Picture 1 (cartoon, rainbow, N blue to C red):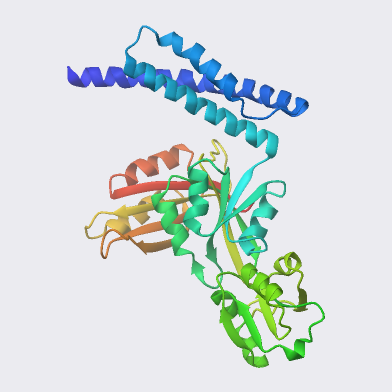
Picture 2 (picture 1 turned 180 degrees about the vertical axis):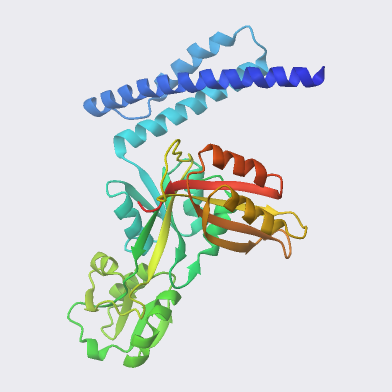
Length: 367
């Protein structure tokens, strides 16, 4: 009896959610019309008096319900209006895209190339940039997931495993490190270079050949800003040409990094997951993360299941789980469309041998 009641309740919820999805789309289309009117008439997005009138009027629809339900409905109305304001803001002001770093940093450059008309907002670290999207302050976040020389960015991988956002695209950015000086400075007089530790490492042969001393900085763009403010012609920064232009520095030497094929792969993450129903082709990929049971052969079984359904793995990596000593989660990137019958069947079978299983995203191989 209890089981039947539960199933009936879930069926009602499922049907209600379906109807709510249709009504949500109808409401947001009307919100778009409101936004267009506000754009034409120079009106602000937030009209607190109008919102309070709507809440008062709509809350009367539940006059016959108990107080707790009426309170929940008022909160539902306020949350709905917050979503509407966010949508209007996006329509009226463009997308807000988060990244970790400052203007001129490679993440800032990547975000600009992916979203050339968006407002880019810099944050001090990967988690803060990620959480800006979770909180709804930004529409998407651009984060580095791996470098062709240094490998995966572990801190971002951990966010992918533990957080709610989805990867909906990737972008490969060639990393070119330039030697930046004050305008008019004599390159032969340079004694010290300032940059991020990874940039210094990438340019180590050039630095050694010129006998420079090194100073580490939090990132390459801030190193360029520091050199510009310092005003010492014997100190140079190693950073991007864009960072040099931002802070008024001159490019004294181009592409001084040892590996000219050095590329960082950035991912675009947002709250909703892209789907490609019916699409085929090797340009569609997905990323999954999972943990396996502590049993002999469990990882091998998971890998076999992925291959069994025709998905070609491009990478398989492991990362330690911070909360569990000597326990690991696994990161798989594979070719193929997971939004197919084969993909659904693979997920079902993987659930039988994995403790945790998370689809991080589906996307075209490169934006």
